Image 1 (cartoon, rainbow, N blue to C red):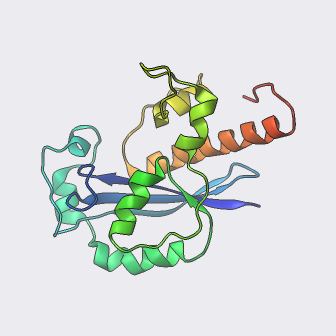
Image 2: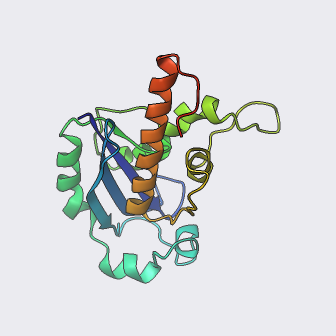
Image 3: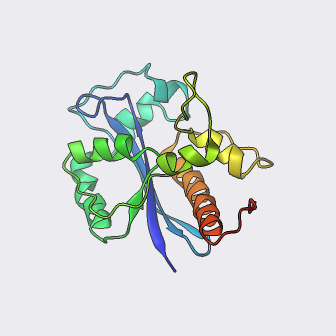
Length: 189
């Protein structure tokens, strides 16, 4: 068994200094079997951060301003639990680590054991061209459609659900990379 943690956060914007984390989800992924186990799922409210009831996350998911404002747990309350999860020293990743880890590290969390970022790893595999001829970073949806072309999925933008689907993408990416290293160039899907 080779376990990694896959985390996803939802936020009220792109600035880790002023925008709020409003949800965190973490799953454990066994890279050998593909087994996924949810291990953390919390709606968060940071009272010292900006929250706009019309921000993108509330318009593009079923997460609501009222739910976050009235039922979100403070990061100060769950922070020690979250840091104890990171202290387990299990390799941790997210789809776009710079974004997710940036928000968490700005709040003082330490994630010292990192696994590769699937967004970066998939860039030369998916080869999605930008206007200037270089490859763009794939979205979760684009990665899903590549590995699971016959399974309909639309990203919910809820942290736990996104982490589960990202873990499935990471599992398939890892299988692909193992096949490529072993010289089997055929797609394994």
